[in-house]
Amino acid sequence: MKEAVLKVLEQVRPSLQADGGDVELVEVTEDGVVKVRLKGACGSCPMSTMTLKMGIERAMKEKIPGVKEVVQV
Image (tube, rainbow, N blue to C red; front, side):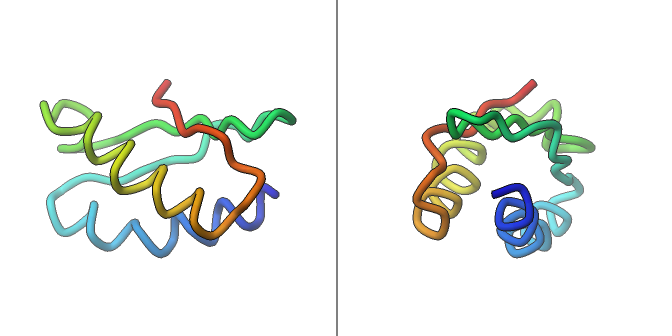
């Protein structure tokens, strides 16, 4: 599943980088929780929770059935 998660992150990364941020994969747990670290402008942005849930998590759940949640660490 980790390879599929990395592939989705590569698809969403350009939009994050366009706003001066980035995302780093920290861990994919066996129960389907993806742990990421938002970096750059995304790390301190007040909208980062929305970016995480409505952008990254939604894309992951659409493309990878085993993903249950995406959390920021």
